[in-house]
Length: 136
Image 1 (tube, rainbow, N blue to C red):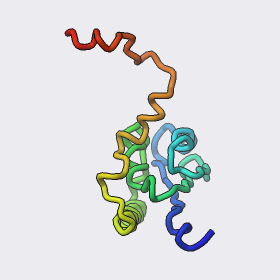
Image 2: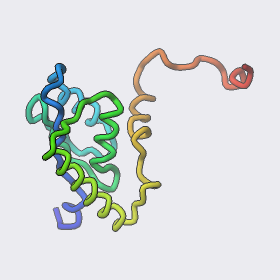
Image 3: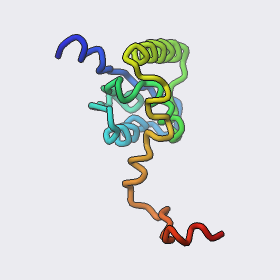
C-alpha cells in the first residue's frame, strides 16, 4: 500500500457508553456498518469498543457517528473521547476538502442507511399503484 492510499484509509475506534444497560452495542453497530459502502472492515474489540476501517473518500467519522446516534446508539461522551472526536472530525474535514470533496458531495447522515433500509424485508411498503397516489 503506497502513502497516498494509506492516507485515504482511516482506522478509528468507536467507543460506546459503558454505563448504558445494553452492553453489546458494539456488536449491533458492527452488523449495521459491515454493509455500508466505504466501510472496509469492522472488528469488535470488546462490548463497548468497535474498530472501523473506512475509505475517507466515501465516509468520514462524523457521518458514521451521527448515523449511529440517530439510530439510537449511545456513544461515549467522556472528555478524552470528545477531544479525540473533535480532532478527527477536523482533520478528516480538511483532508476531504483538500481532495476536492465538499460537504454537498458526501452522503448526509440520513442517506447513509437509505440503501440498507430499502433492501430490508419489512411491512412498511406502500402497495398502491403510482397513479392512485395522486388522489387524497
